[in-house]
Image 1 (spheres, rainbow, N blue to C red):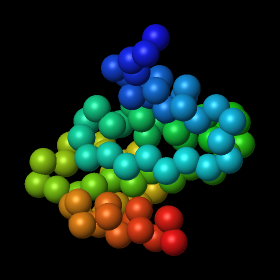
Image 2 (image 1 turned 90 degrees about the horizontal axis):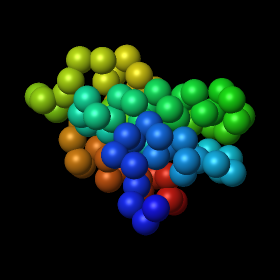
Image 3 (image 1 turned 45 degrees about the vertical axis):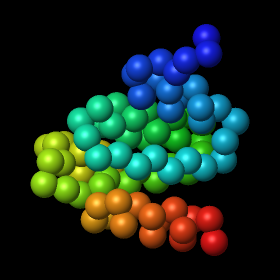
Image 4 (image 1 turned 30 degrees about the vertical axis):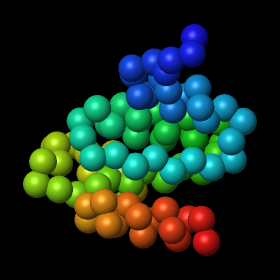
Length: 86
């Protein structure tokens, strides 16, 4: 349908088909399934994945466990995006 599934893990699995690399960035518990899906799909499909956790006072337990790297707040996210697009 025209709307994305509310399950971010399922969205990542669908959106990553045919890609060579994917970077996902998250900051809350709802992003953990997205991180898991990116890792699982990369091991099955053979593309490279990078999971980045955004650190904050509200960061849920377990988010770092499923990330490859972390950044501080929105400023850190912007730096990563600028680096990846340069």
